Image 1 (cartoon, rainbow, N blue to C red):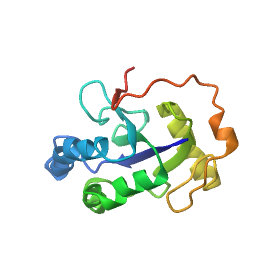
Image 2: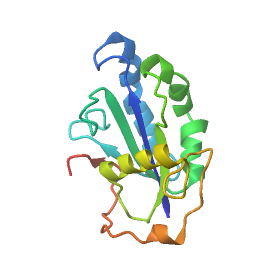
Image 3: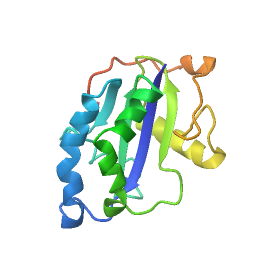
Image 4: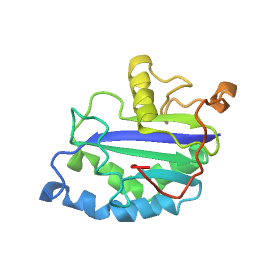
Length: 168
């Protein structure tokens, strides 16, 4: 099993605004760091760039950015998120993102070779918000080990590419 990560964030200002310029300027570097990290499998990118900043699954909230990635293990994901240069970006999130009272990060196990969808990711986040951490949707702090049923998935797995466009 591999581990999927979905997180969201509402920007304090639109792209092009000086208040978020450093965030956007650092995205390529941080994404390249993820791509080169041990245990990285896949991440969502949009059709125009090497990031997912134009992906807007929440129609009612056009300022909400999303991130979706897959990792070999909880340890490899944790090392990238909390023990790499990414942590500096994480520390500065309040400079670029508005506070959200609900959960903004969800993790879940996926079969090796499976590509999670945005709809599935949003459902997992909604499940976490409604039920708290469960084997279906959990957090770093309240993680679960893979369950035997996690390997059974009715969707045909798609081959991974290092970065896959959101429009495919």
